[in-house]
Image (cartoon, rainbow, N blue to C red):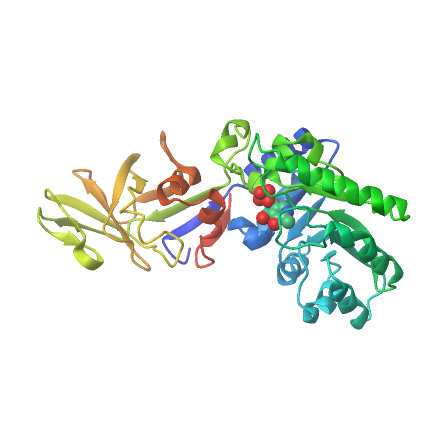
Length: 367
Ligand SMILES: Cc1ncc(COP(=O)(O)O)c(C=O)c1O
């Protein structure tokens, strides 16, 4: 142990979640999205756990994220979800990363790199308006891909903008646009072997989005894509907990303030514990001000004063607390639990932001 603050990641929870998602979306297999350091859970451990749970492939955002997985000995198919700088193309080829293309320049980069039949998935923008070839240009781009010796059309996909909104008809609109593109491709003689559209919310909510694979991220970590569908995610188990040990304890007197700005003033004499983590680890500076709590001695205790870069303080009242005691910022202790959802709700964030915001400075330990 190199410090008294760390993240624990339950690999059995990720395995369980992948199995649950695979059962739900069967016969479409799960490709686990492990970009952004496995949504803060650690990319390699998350990828291994997902594969152990039955994931058939992995998705990343960056070539370097794929390289990290290959360097760890992971041999499963890896899809890079968007076009990457031309300079990275040779690295993608060397590491057998399936690439995404949606522009002529994207295809040209593979030609320039001297690739041969490198597998690419063509991404179609059916309405997210982020990246992707316009539906009207999809057949022409597919022709360019098929005619280029550098690349091979291994898949076609799109990304959904409102899949977590149960009653929003735009998901149906996007899937219809995808189907129109697929029909036009078929008419032109192009039959991509794999078609995909579903993120976690779509895999859970929209059977018609599941297609040949589902690309699930947040749900494999046991988190709900949005509070509105949390009731459909009860079989998922949160994989991450954030833990620390008390690094310092002292008494403070009524009337004293604490931390930068002395913004929190104590109403009574109390015991204050310091935890050795802060906003440089991903605990927002305002966490105390928004009512944030930690579990300590099996009880919820309020964070007091602003969270500093490396340390934060907790009001323990009359509770007996000692240096070295275990605190839980996210996860369970005794009968208590603080969830990522609670953080998100207090902080006005989505759950994705909370876990992705936990920085590499925190060691990830697999349990
Ligand atoms: C293209 C693409 N597919 C799939 C996902 C996974 O989404 P989720 O984490 O909601 O399952 C993402 C995540 O942002 C994405 O960008």
